[in-house]
Length: 372
Image (cartoon, rainbow, N blue to C red):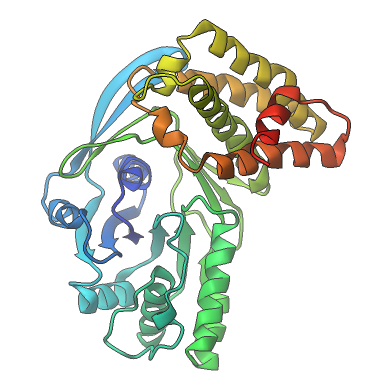
């Protein structure tokens, strides 16, 4: 019997990641899906996506870039989504569907999606009112699921938040206590709903209207192993006991490299619409980035016992950076630059210096010093 997925979020990332993976797994004969998409936020410019998801025929995901040295440009029509709801317009239907039909849930609700609105701190869980925040909505849905018989549920969040599964689990559990939900519900929540930590990595820079996306070939969905059976297998899905290693590679190689390039772009006053691929066409900048990776980043990872993994990921990252199809604008990457320097560069040096205090990283140190 196939396992119904309820997906919270309509983003182009989810379309080119979870939806595409499930489509490919189903095509290979795996009993997973189909997917019900739920738009969780009120209003906004994504209302048209719900109507588009409801149309038969699927949507395009175009994969463009380098794969193992070869240039690819291919389109897949993704047919894994067969239902869609707007949580605010269709709340009773969402509640009924989640309570009775969901086997697996996934989410991608943005960096601030786990914030709990003040009006959700005190709430009647049996109310027909729609909670404002995503954790509130999720708790109300879980309450309805418990009242409908309490079938187990696997929840796979994909937000770029450290320990996202554990954090979301704690937020929901704390909110359940604040709402005065029964001991029986809280016991079921702790024992029958599994929130698994995960990390996703794929650049999806363009949308296709009304739904669809353009994405790079590289993709990763790393999930921390736990007391659950993975709902599907896929070449891009990795089950791991050490999720932190994947988090560090992404944050301190891919994201760090983006921030180094944003620093070069800002400092030298380069053209406004310059992209990652275009700035690397400047031989001096390309050499400087390569030197930082070779003489500072990889030795830093080596100090933490990750030399081979880091060296391989650097090569993959540079190939991704040079993707001629991705319009990845440095002006966008440079948003919140000081915060990104702290998280991607200063935090990397601090992590390395815990193990090797005297390891020199002069280029990175100079960037970090400028934003202290």
